[in-house]
Image (cartoon, rainbow, N blue to C red; front, side, top):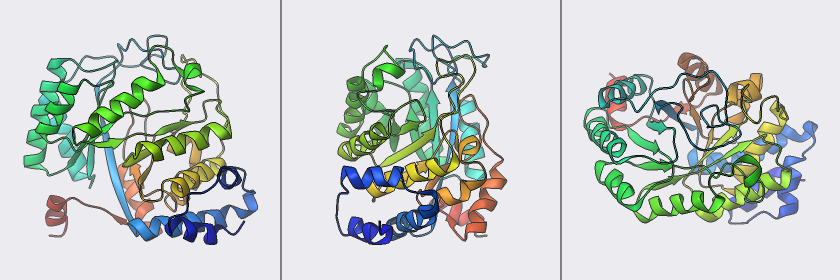
Length: 332
C-alpha cells in the first residue's frame, strides 16, 4: 500500500474503503513509519505542527450507578479509588489556573454519574463564566447524559465543547455496559450539537473489540461529525470488569491513531487515557497522526509530568497551541 498516495487522496476528499481501513490496522510493523508519514501528511495539511493541550479536573469521583466495565468509578467496580461529591466552584477555578499556567488551551470539567443535577450544572455554569473572564480558556464539560435545558444553560455560560464518548462500536456496546444504551450516547451528542456546543466523542481501544469494531467506531464518529475525537487506550484497573485485559502494544496503538486520522482527516484527534502505559516509549510518534493530548492526570489514573509533555512536543519540533491570553503572557 502506498500510504502517502492514499493520504493525498484523503486530503482530496476520498473516503477510504473498509479494506483500506483494515489494511491500516493490520499494517506490517516494517511499514509502520510509512503509514505514519501518510497520517502526518493529512495532519499537517489541516493542523500544521500545532499541538492542542487539554487538562482534566475530576469534579466528582465515584458514586456512579452505571456498570461500565472499564471504569473504576462504576457501580460494579471494587477498585479502591478516592470518592467525593461534586467539588466547589472555587476548586474548579483553581484547576483552571493550573491549566492556564501549564499552557493548556482546553480545560475539561468531568464528573462521574449518569447525568448532572440542576445544582451541578449551576456550579459548572458559574465557574465557566469566571474561567472565560480570567483565563480565556476553552472549556469542555463531560457530565454524562444531558437534558435539553442543561445543554442550553451550559451553552449560555460559555461552554465550548461537550464530551460524551461512544467508547466502542454499537454491536460491542452491551459487552461494555448494560445500564444505558448506545442510542443514549448518540442522543446526548445530538443534543449538544442542537444547542450549538461543539461535540467531543471518542473511543476506548483494547476492550476485546475486533478490528472491524474499531473501524466502525471511527466511521460512527465521522457520521456524528464529532469535532474532537479522544482516542483512549484501555488502562485495565484491578477491580473492574476488564481487570487483567492487556491486548495492546505500542505499534497497534499507533496504527489505531492513524486509522482515526485517515477516516476523520479534518478533526482534532487526541491521544487520551492510557497513553503512557500503552504507547510507552513510542508516545512521540503518536503526534504524527494526532494533534492533541491530555496533560497531567486522568480521572483515577496518573499521567506523566507536564514538563515531560512540553519537552516531548519541543523535541519533535512541534508547537503548543495557546489561547489569546496565554500568548500575551508567555510571549512577555
